[in-house]
Length: 235
Length: 235
DNA sequence: CACGTTTTGCTACTTAGGTAGCATTTTAAA
DNA sequence: TTTAAAATGCTACCTAAGTAGCAAAACGTG
Image: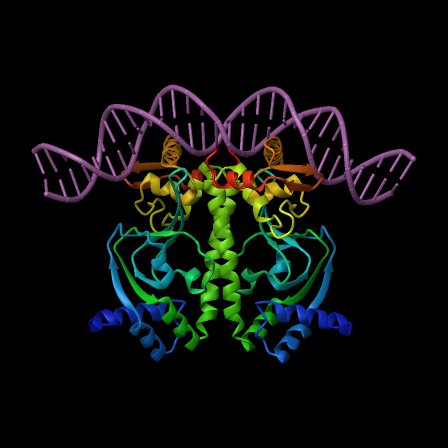
């Protein structure tokens, strides 16, 4: 890596606080940074070339990236994950696991470290303990996927939408909060439906007094009602 | 473990051929067997007590187990995984990852090794290299889940059903083959729908000359037509 | 064999959700 | 400032899929 000292320190500090690399020795972490290349992906950068992530491993430093699948037969997107600080991708290519066709898009300006998969594998061979933290990390992601599929397969869209909003509410601050600033299309992709349907149910929620809407901003005004939506049992 | 020598050897041979334990030293593998208890779960054995798998790690030696979620609100089951030889469960409890409420049922007579989670963790600490194979294993499972959710979220039921049948066909032998011997309810749980809907589409497939049906046995008679169902584009 | 249970096949009904289309508003860019 | 693009709100329509219910067939267990 060939950058200013400040940047370097910034990356170092970020990694050392990540659950994935926290136990790695100083030297090893430096080595990891040496084989890394820093990149800035402006908002809306798309990685549609699947072979790119097949040969390059990424560590997300700051920003937000969505991982999605595209189904050409009905022109629909399905967002599998939203990645944030200290997420990495793609573990599948790192483990040489059969292809999975997913695309990436930066939802915000994003900083990533890029490492050739072959070198990352070498580095991991020299730091075998990371397998444990990678395992723990992967299991957490898998847990998310598991809940996701249970949702999509067994619950209707109002419930899924309510749960999405609820999970992305900022419960700490004033009770009502907003979800990231995503369009209805993006929300649809997150729960496995289309923007028209999302909009329909948002209007319903609005009428029921659950939330208020402004452009790309949803504010929950009645958390109790929202919770009722999730636990089912209509009225 | 306190069993006959033959059984012991049987377990040993099975484990050593598993991708999870193939690289483990002779001594370590013996130690693993020592802290294991062998159990036979007859067909239809159900593990509905979630705390059991929370504290006990299992290695499946022979047989077949389905991992499923139950949704009380509409009385529906969703099968997340079918586990077979050399599968293990549950990695979630092993990694101390937040609860996931799943149940288990033996679809055939099944032999499992049971190991207290705490002891399994200890053993893994003594054999840190297994984290790598566990990681690889988990990533493979995650890949399955990922495909699963893409299917459920983006494809209609005829397509999902066709794909299920196709994937479980024995392509090596005579082209037409059968899926395990599951009822329509079980098939429904595998693709996220109900038995009535599965039956409906099976009747359709039958009329289209794709397959023949006898009790708990589906025989694909026209693989090309089945493949067309999967790649979409009706007519 | 006779029994109850499970599985299957089928009807008819209802509805959530997917689709198409359009007009309005907001935002970003030229 | 003007223009194009993106996002939203809403109508109307249609189909797939969930539901309920029942009867016949197959199974297995005493």
